[in-house]
Length: 262
Image (cartoon, rainbow, N blue to C red; front, side, top):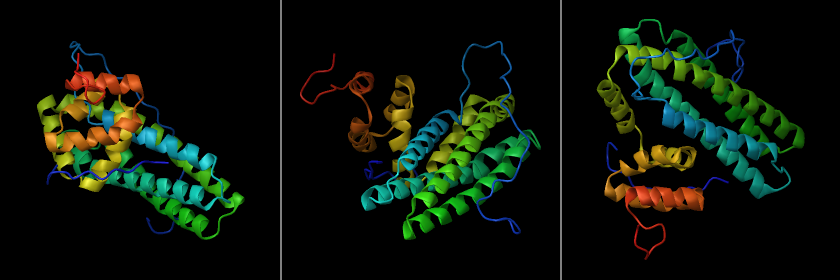
């Protein structure tokens, strides 16, 4: 079950005619290999951290639904609450990409985001449908309904994984060809400034354990001191001992209170 820790953040920090939640058939799209460049310096990736968080959130939620006990009110409530939180996160992510990333792509690569933009409409319809099925299962929990919901969520997750792969390949190619890293950081900063405290807390809960040690240190180390302490407290139960020790060493802190960092 997801562990929720509230963190106080500084300010700033259906289409008609289709059944809601139905993913229409779309041509198979596969990520294209990134073009080799002369530079060995990696480019700034707008998608990297948030997509890792979403993948972990989605797979963990799917696992919970696969073993959901409809005869256990607490397990049922926890599983459906996590599903609703995951759907909220997916909805917010679509909104952020539509508001900030796609306009940036279209400004310098007209038409390059059209396919993914259309898929976003499908995703919003699917999210609405899954929310309705979640409410129906809560009202009348049966094993058959739980299995149907699990399969629908599995299809939603599978399509999202393919969708994110296209963004990480084709959309990154368009962004890297059109923008400097400084400009991409500016876009990223505007995205972060638009995220409210509750949404940020939820995404950090999944992002921190999803990242590798270097990425995790970048995310936590970039937080202002008033925010970093509660984020670390919330992160502690999400990381195993080696991961926690690496993070503390990178921050220059002792992994155990009272010890001196090496």
